[in-house]
Image 1 (cartoon, rainbow, N blue to C red):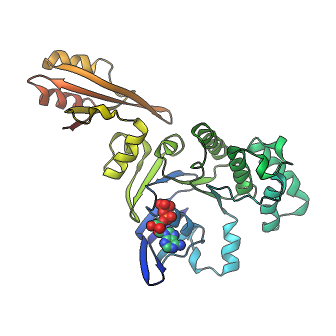
Image 2 (image 1 turned 90 degrees about the horizontal axis):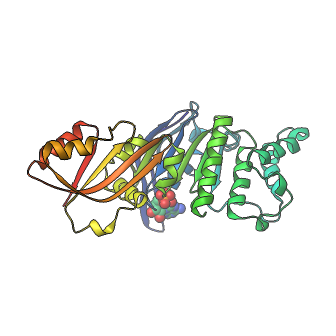
Image 3 (image 1 turned 90 degrees about the vertical axis):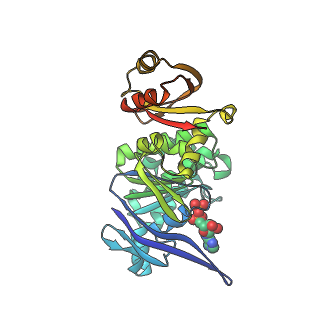
Length: 327
Ligand code: ADP
């Protein structure tokens, strides 16, 4: 378990100071996959680096499995870090070592039993699907393959926690989703706890059940992924989600409604019932579905014309449809 209690971090540069984290508290359960999203500069990297002791908070506690890690002596912290692995946007591979050697390095550093090291490397390579590239050097790999090596290196010591810092941000969309699938597969097999930070909310939706949104060094939402997408509270979250659903810009001068609904919960005939019951004309501009794990959320953008619009909207809301009006 990872518990952050009232974490603040102030950076001081020359005579200027900047508060990157402002009283952040967060609890992450074992085996969870949690996403931390926010715009660039929100404090995500600082927060995740506090979790493995790379950054010491100015105040507050980072408690991992009952131990306040910032109270540990450096050698004890180093030992603890073997349980808290990390992967990075730029992979951080050693360029003059092969794939095999890069992964083995993690075992050497941990001083794991020598006779088992090669076997462990091969198992990790097998897990990330790179056994056939073990003798290549990093420059001979694609971005996605480099990240697979990064993941193999991070999990070869069988850590309890995997911190992912913008791990898919440098990759094209298809490769990013491949990496997400791989992380899900690894989670299923190993039950490793994953903390995934990114500015790409679309990546989170397929990976995490829970999402934390950060802005200006604070946590502004901490919700299930599904709830976050259906009913985002903050403007930041709304704008992050809008990027994913690709809201049509041609609606911006119109008075329109946004309907958000779960496919499973909503009776297919609700819209036609509403039209008949309340004598409403509907002009549909745009529709889109978004799959979050095993659930599908629908977004429908439309104009409604009629004298009983308010009642019609109430009817939709009473049938589990979120309705937002845009003027
Ligand atoms: P994010 O990961 O959300 O982009 P960061 O945690 O990297 O955010 O940064 C949060 C804020 O702290 C940014 O404004 C950044 O410029 C500042 N910051 C990060 N690291 C340092 C540092 N070492 N020194 C000074 N300011 C920093």
